[in-house]
Amino acid sequence: MTAAALDRRPENRLVDHFEQGLEAPICLTWELTYACNLSCAHCLSSSGRRDPRELTTEQCEAVIDELQRMGVFYVNIGGGEPTVRPDFWHLVDYAVAHQVGVKFSTNGVRITPENARRLAATDYVDVQVSLDGATAEVNDYIRGPGSYDTALRALANLHEAGFRDAKVSVVVTRQNVGQLDEFKAIADRYGATLRLTRLRPSGRGADVWDELHVLPEQQQELYRWLVAHGEDVLTGDSFFHLAPLGGPLPGLNLCGAGRVVCLIDPIGDVYACPFAIHDEFLAGNVLGEGGFAGVWRDSGLFRELRNPQSAGACSSCPFFDSCRGGCMAAKFFTGLPMDGPDPECVLGHSETALLGQRSVPPASQDHSRPFATRNEPVLVQLQRRRPAAPPVSACAESPLAGFQPAPTPR
Amino acid sequence: MPTPVQAAPVLDVAASPRLARSVSVRPERFGALLYDFRTRKLMFLKSPRLAHVVRLMDGTTTVGDCMDRAEVPAGERGPLLQVLHHLQRIRMLTDHPLPEGGPEERDTP
Ligand code: SF4
Ligand code: SF4
Image (cartoon, rainbow over all chains, first blue to last red; front, side):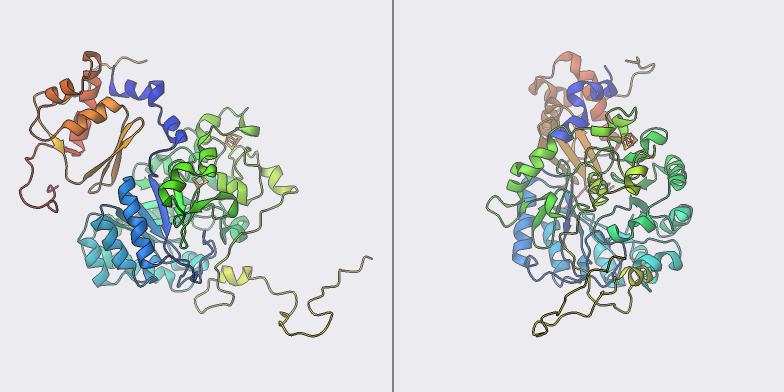
């Protein structure tokens, strides 16, 4: 028997272990703050303003202590822009000192030459710089004016400081899918690795998904590119819904929500996945009695997600084994049934459903800034809904204040 | 199941490697997970017995002795040694003697 044969024995099918859940998450994301200097149009956590209930430094340290006890290897720190938290560098040092590695996502705003040098000094910290266009034009349309330069400066600072293998993290969109070679060249220039992820309709992403998500013919192009470069780029669990185009790609080929993936938000709420910040996927809070470990092991939601999921309308699909109906969050936030095909099903099985009657769930939270800022992306300005009527002040006396007459039927 | 034309390389039973300092282990129901902070590679040890053997490897005990102590049946030793060889190839296992000094010290790549 070979090692490969060992893998194929039924008790060794990893997918099954994943579905039963692990002792601790492999891919744990921790959004440290909802505060952000940018207002990206597709922000998965609708970030902008800090939540006043944000965990304190001591509470964050207690979470790290617990992650260490659980044997969590590393935590993906994000936000918001995590580096704007005044205790950010302290928490990174604290995690490393407690054998919890840190991978953090940043728009680059605080990656000065000095900070780059301190990051280069340890193996336990990895940095992902977000970039959503290989040119300033494409990037800044989504991420806001100046954000391209900030990201490239951060990559240059890391490279010059001798930081090895930073990640250039790209959300693939209709506008940038033609720039994959250029993204790769940028990553190569800075000795970095390219990381491509899928645009999901989460957070503010729900408002712009129709305009930004890759078109069916672009999915072919993306798939071919990933087949050609798959070993050199990181994709996480982003593209398993493309498997029917010609076979599974490297990466995690299943939805790990609540099984290997989960999210801790800035106030300590635990969700099944970073793309599922919604009451529907809220499993508990780290400040509760059992702490994070209690939520991970015992929450009703996670137990449910670890049970075999119904394939629903996908059950007759010959590709179900590799595609598994796609991304739970993408279905949820586009108002599609959870046990049916992904909104970007490559066989086109969601096209009719997307055109028909569906009710998109209202966001359960929004930390966006209420007013425009200097570096707001054009796309956000276009999206910002103009109020239908002036706001009603609390002391308005007119009995008709705030009354919206229904349009008169003709 | 296809029969391999050429046997995959195996670790020498007389070797006595240990886990690199940059590797963390977490026990799981199916065996264990290994994570290497230096290469950021995650590995699955997909059997509790294999995980047990890896736990026993301390840099002085031979792999053969570790397998005896973990009571690995003869039929499982071949595949297990292949996995160990792979771990050595990706440098999660090392032959270097334990470095002197504090726990901060790590193997040089
Ligand atoms: S819901 Fe989507 S993004 Fe979240 S773990 Fe599942 S596949 Fe990944
Ligand atoms: S029908 Fe379902 S399983 Fe088949 S390709 Fe579409 S989403 Fe995937």
